[in-house]
Image (spheres, rainbow, N blue to C red):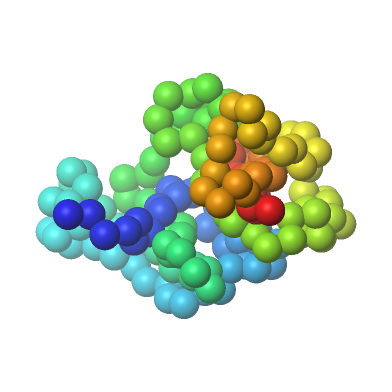
Length: 152
């Protein structure tokens, strides 16, 4: 039986730039930086000659975020990564306590948002305890879609 989501892995081009964004802008904490290689990782990911740098980022609650840069073999970037309707895993959502305050802090750091904070209509989606979800989308520096959300 599945227990929980352990981590989310983002394969990146600019490891240091993404580390700066996720730590300095979003506030995640670096807990480990390692290089992985060898037969075990080749077999796990289905590639040969893998060498990758990995940064582990932790949140106070929830799954870990791993930033992974393939040194060998180098990765490819999909054409439409930043579009919401591209097939596959599309966004990573972070729950925050006070979304309006957090959004203003990010705006001061020049993070552009796709919209203002929106409220999901309870005529379309209902949440446990009668809570309403408020959310907003934005992109990280490499075009991954991120969401901030809170329940009130």
